[in-house]
Length: 104
Image 1 (tube, rainbow, N blue to C red):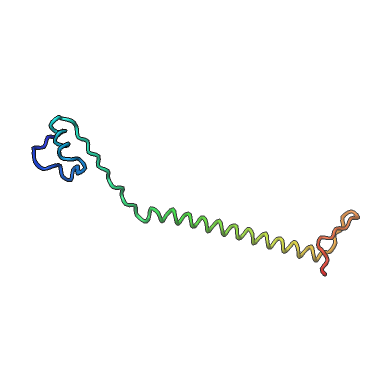
Image 2 (cartoon, helix red, strand yellow; image 1 turned 90 degrees about the vertical axis):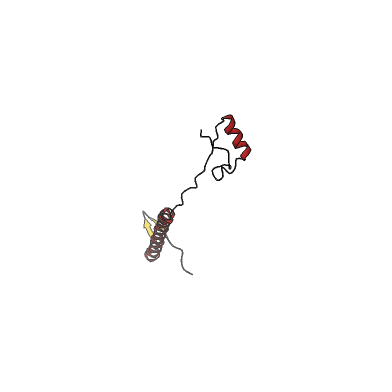
């Protein structure tokens, strides 16, 4: 611990410690603990933009994949409907199945 000669208070080193308590601690030889909280370093925009870009790219890719799958299913359903309506009734082993309803 360093001893300061009598004089001005510690000033900006520890403005939260009253002068009389500071001097009393010096006289009695008690340690004075000063905790200085360092401000967190500012983050660059790059820190936020890269994960945001990756997340958006992933979301757009997933949405595109889902849209492509749905379009493929729709095309397959339309194709199956067209083939079924053009084929008419299907007979298997003496049983006849009509795949579509008659148009009215």
